[in-house]
Length: 325
Ligand code: ATP
Ligand code: LTN
Image (cartoon, rainbow, N blue to C red):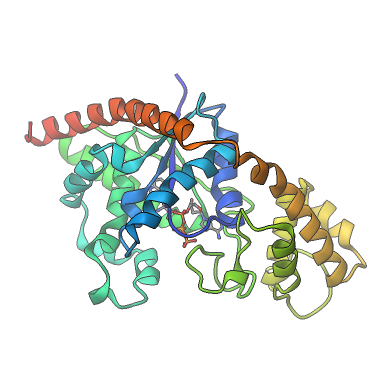
């Protein structure tokens, strides 16, 4: 029996190369070896206000992005979170297992509520519990995510262990899969922050659908550090970030990257980086046009059926163990 993977992304904003290098790329790589479930987490999206029309469109667009990135519906199950009601049901149960103090420590909530918890939705506070439910419903072994989700994975393990202890063996305890390189691609404008979909500065991120001129312009305007060497160096996060993008997209080792740019200036480096990013994204950008709405609906419908089969078994077991059913 293959081990199982679960991961998801929110159908909000525009996906950027951070989402791709930190998560999606690994989803594609791991789908051969694992029984993979990739979810479009639209119930997570509404933890902050969304325009209903835009949300509906973005949900289908994100399915198209998964497919164009190389997630193969013959190998992996692709589905929309709200099509499987068990996600919300298990979240309620786990709300009764999670503790306020645990959720209060979540740094994503602190960031996304901008320190003003009183004005944030209860859903935003509870966001991690829904994520825990996504993962545990499928008896997941491995969760490929970027660095920013590490704390949520720790919570997942804690809640699973607590439930198993209190009610008997029920959930598999999942491991995070955080890639050694690319787990935190930084903003092109401020290397103290990660590249983020919700960044107001559109020049801080390279979006998956940016055209060649836009990519080239954004890289040209990206901030750099003092000094001129093009080397990996923790003290020089901006250049290290650009080199990391180059490394992942060129397929070279870090030593090869440094050797390649030895003696060259930022101008040459940025020009070559832009060409590399444009070429790397080209097949994805061509493929995304291939899927029409009918084909997508079929894939998502059969994905939801497959997901529901597993999710309903887990929820039934949970309810029986708790004396609900
Ligand atoms: P935002 O960029 O607004 O914080 P998000 O992280 O909520 O968006 P999702 O679409 O839910 O976006 O994330 C999808 C995946 O991309 C997650 O696994 C997340 O860890 C990963 N990811 C997000 N930003 C980065 C980044 N800058 N570098 C690497 N991985 C990232
Ligand atoms: N919180 C994640 C998205 C997400 C997720 C999941 C990732 C929701 N449920 C389950 C992995 C597994 C984020 O990236 N913002």
